[in-house]
Structures are given as structure tokens and as C-alpha cells.
Image (cartoon, rainbow, N blue to C red; front, side, top):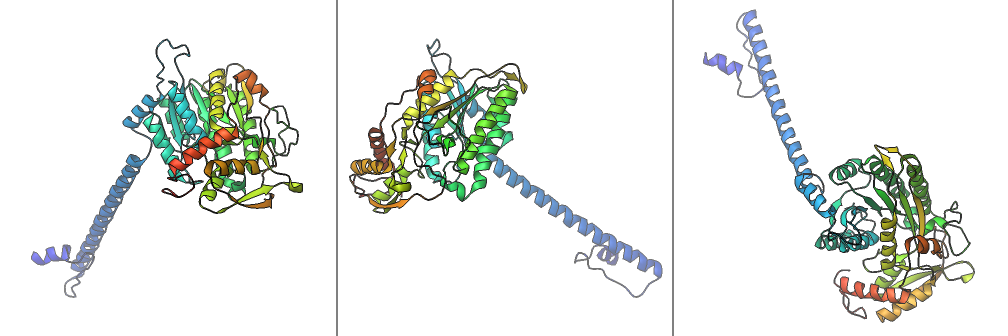
Length: 440
């Protein structure tokens, strides 16, 4: 009997003992028994492997779930708390809005979120914290928002499930869509990122908005870049915008056409804002005034472009606080969306406004102002502007925004750069004159 047990359960799985003696029946019996044993061992190993893989998959999935920046009851409570308006009862300005801000950890998004929260509106942010520029700056902005009770979800606007979940948790009254792939020159390096964010991402967001009940009013960031090769100044909302000079501009122009379609078919209330060279504290490191400041303090040369015939480039630099006022005024005056269940019930507002300063300043003058406030002389390389999508000048006509939004910029470039330099020196740990550097 002992021998039989050893035969059925060999010490080495899959190894079969064969006896030459014995009849045909016994050999067949042993053959089948050994085959059965091999099968049982194989089945056991498969089961153990499957169990391990299933457990590992569970662990991985659980880790991703708990490490993810959205999902779960606690997450939903955070969303609701952040979205709840906090204006005093009976406030003259009304009960307050619940605003979903995309690109909330971005430059304009952070300032708008803080302003909304400060006046008592509910704010929930979404940002994917991509690496187009230093993500640590975006994380620092998000940390600043957290100290003011603004919750920022780490997620992508192309994630339709995330957006649907947010609208399921909170009936947002407004969406301030500021998430985008910015920058004119980077489009030559990574064109797909512009289509992904500025076109596909916009459509995904608009789909979520038109399916929401109630539908929110949408205010979103277009760009002064849509004026492209237009040489009529100042740029008016009535001017042609069918000659973009860059892919970035083309995606923003496409956004204006796409939002008009959703307004027309689904009754979404839409306001597009054409920003003109926004600058200020917590700004974008890829912008000229920011990179000039960094290089001047580090003793590195800066590249100053000139247009044809040695004409200085000029920009309608607009201070961040002025742009924020225009964004909030747009939210406050946005009419209601008229669709329900994805179906239009009546006409809804569709508006486009320029948000600029109306006072273009040449780039050499910008550098001179920075030198004054930094107390450091710049090393300049002056070269002709390459054909990279940049335009020689921008100049905003803001009469429409002034009339309908009460928009009135009050900060000139000298005053605005003074505030920016003060923030920059503090944030990056410089003493005035560039003698100390903690973060760079």
C-alpha cells in the first residue's frame, strides 16, 4: 500500500515511476494514475499562480485606487465641502456660485480660484499637473489653494468618467475652463499635446456640461493669439480671426467654433475670453518676463527678438488682477444654459470678450523695467524674430468688455512688474541684487 501511495503522489511533481514487471492492466493503471497526478499538480500550480496574480492585481488596483486623487466617500465629502458657497445669508451679491475651475493649479486658475473663494463662492479645481513647466510650482499653487479651503482634484479634462463623477457629486452652476496647453513656440515641438488638451479636452468637458442637470454656464479661456496675422489695431472682437500664425492659435480658434456649436445645439451658455499676455506673481516660467527675470538674476544672457526692419516687438501686457476681475465679471453676467438632458430648450448666450490692458509696451522697455526693479543689468542678445508662430505686436480693444462687464484694467506694466519681482525674489529665495538662490 505504501508503494501505491508513493506511485500516486511522487516526491517530485510530474515525475512518474515505471515498472517493467506486471501486466498490461497494471501498466495502464499506473500510466493513467501518473497522468492524473501530473494533471492534479499542474492544476494546483495553475490555481496557485492565478491566486497570486489575482491577489497582486488586487493589491496593485487597491494601491492605485487609494493613491488616486479622486474617488471614494471621503473624496466626495471634500468635493462637496469645497463646492459649497460661503456667502453670508441675505448677502447683497446673492447666494453664491459653485464653480468648477479647470487648470486650477495654473497661473490664472489659481488667482481666479482664490478670488472666488475670498468672496464666498464654492470652488472645486481640476488639474493634471503636467510637466510642461516645473510641476513643483503648480503643486505650490495647489497648496496655497488648500490653505484657503479650495480642493484641487488631480485629473485630466480628457477623463470623461472623472468629469461625470464631479457633476454627479455637485450640481455646479458655472464652469471656468482655464486648462489648456499653452505656449506658441512649444507647438512646434509637441503639436499633439495642443490637440489633446485644447481640442479633445475641450470637447470632453463640453460633453460633460451638456449632459449635466442642471447645465452650468461656461466661461473659458480663448486667446489673443486667434487674431493671428491680423494687422488692424487695436484688435476688436469683430475682426477676422481666420489666419492663425501658430498651431496654438489654431486650436484656440477651433475652440471658439466648437463652443459655438455646443451653444447652438445644446443650449450651453458660453463666454470666451481672449487674454492678452497675462503676467504677475505665481506666473508661468515659459513667459518672457519670467525667464528674463531668472536669467538676469543668474547672470545669463537673455534673447530679445526684433521684428522685420528692426522694429521692436510689443505686447499688450495685462496684470493678473485685472484679468481675474474680467473672469469673475464674466461668471457673474453669464446667462443661464437652457438645455436639459442634453437637449436645447431655448437660445442661450454666446459671448466673446477681449481682456487686455490697451497699452502695448515694447520688449526692450519690459527689460528696462525689470532691470530697475531687480537692480541688475541684463546681458542682451538682440536677434531677428524666427518664424516660430509669434506675432510682432498685440493690442486689445476692450470697449465691449468695458460696456458689458464693467471691465477696467488699472495696473500698468511698471506697477505690475514691481509686484511680480517682489514675489519672485521671495518665492525663489533671492535677496535683491541676485545674491541668494534657494529654489533654482
